[in-house]
Image (tube, rainbow, N blue to C red; front, side, top):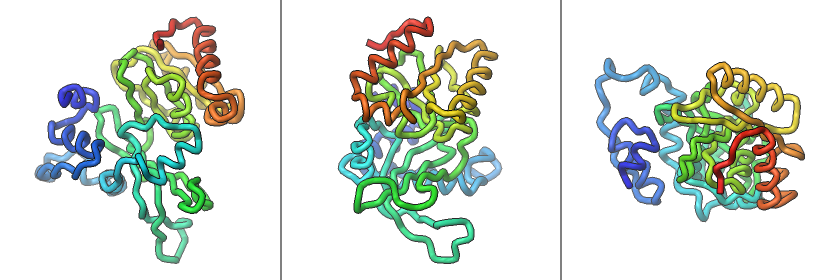
Length: 274
């Protein structure tokens, strides 16, 4: 199992894999590996402060089950989680760049953003309101620490069917994963970054799950042009309402599943999801 996890994560060392496995099981984090001499480090390892802060923040989180983060996702109809999201009860929050007040400490849903080598480059933060279990009533409750350009939050299935569903927001892509559990998922968090996504190796087909608006349409077109120039097959999944989480909550998992599969089949691609 460790070998399979090591391959799936694309970890550089066995210690990285063991650390992730222990964290997912809710155990104490595996001792960090000794630092290599600075001259041997990659440019993004230790020299990029936002990336280093993102890794530190995510490492400080804990599994989401039984936390406010799980409550938030459940209110959105989402129970498919995996090791990508974590929870932290006291994440620093500034209201704005020019905010002179000391930062607050607010509970937040965290999600790691890896590159195609499996190395964490960023951490998404969804600040939560403990009184209602929803997003905090602040300007921009969803924020990113570190580097997102070309990357995404990943949610792997056990099927390895060769298809990847790529979408915008975290809640939206997880909403697609609820009725289609055999598909791998990637959340680019914004329409802009959806259009910049760099697919990982080994992916045979990509489905672009987008919001039903102009920003989503433009991002999908940009990504689709890039994928087709690489000779990669792709299709498009568009929400009926504002976004796919709206569809999940309005129509239910089974109806959404039927709708998504019909859309896929109508685009001429065979479906391996059982």
